[in-house]
Image (cartoon, rainbow, N blue to C red; front, side, top):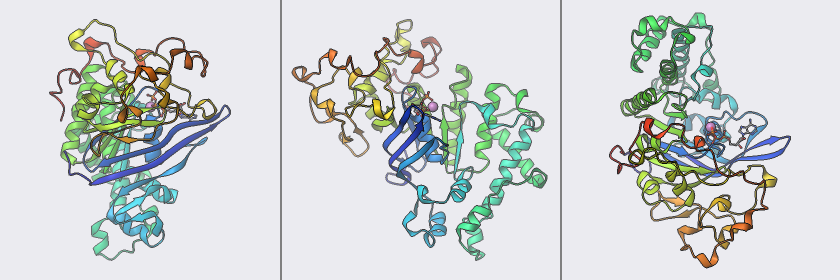
Length: 428
Ligand SMILES: Nc1ncnc2c1ncn2[C@@H]1O[C@H](COP(=O)(O)OP(=O)(O)OP(=O)(O)O)[C@@H](O)[C@H]1O
Ligand code: NI
């Protein structure tokens, strides 16, 4: 694991809302995350818990009717800090910069070079009418221009002025005819790096000529073209079949080791978390409800929701047994339908009177392990339990159970990662 306290990213009090015709959707609320340089940080939760909105907020990719309404996103980059300091002193703290306070042009210039994102659906990342090689070469070209910008140490010693304008100008998308031969060569190298056979030939092919797994690899190559410090991977393997899933996870793991980049990995699959991550945040209803190391989450969890997620993992040793989905529905995130209580209380087997006010985040035993649940401080007492009938009129009638597919898309016998249940042999 990486050195303690070298945070590359520090998200504080992040709230992202969507202002829809039905009302305000509280997609992400008061979210805190610290990600250390070089670690793989996982975010896990059921569908609709706000994982993708968190990822897009960090990337600066929230579109109307959505908006980040609150919070800070501190990113550690000494050269960026120096470039910004004069114009926007409030946005700088030592070698960290609050991305939320940067003009959109600067924020945009960081995408691809400082932050890259890969998605569940690789088709969306490629233009169907250009070859994969051409598109990768363009991505490389953007990076080449960016590294000629004042942020690089080389430019700095040559005495270029640090300014926000230089930043924005340096990463304007090049037109295709200016893509250099060396960028084309680098594109082929990238295809090779992500394990695409015959990369010279494959570079000449169009996206539709690639299989799903190959296109996923190509998208990873595209994300790596800018040598990003932080890779945000949103369900990068969900759409793939299990063997390919395992290969892509291996590839990400290998690339992470080679490049020492930091990865924010989003998934609803705790098996993927166990296999890939150093630390985890469990999301529910737009909040991180429990976070900590793998041990904290898998062995010493406090939140009944975390317990519930673990119970819903297919168990290889008990193959054939039914999953235990968490009863009840994910809550509405519409502001006017959210009661000011623990959002999980209506599904929680241990809901007590204290859960009827919204819990703050509480430390468990060390600085890494924190939970939004009164059980961090109080023992469960049956005499204080909220009666089952209490929540029956609270919001829409539940139609029974959560679809286990929301939590785990693969049947037990195909599950690629048994690490969750086998005592953690594959955990790092
Ligand atoms: N463009 C949008 N307009 C309105 N609401 C949105 C929009 N995008 C997301 N939301 C809402 O934000 C909430 C969180 O969505 P998000 O996509 O982050 O969930 P998720 O945890 O990534 O789920 P999944 O596992 O299904 O991808 C949901 O209630 C969703 O309806
Ligand atoms: Ni999502």
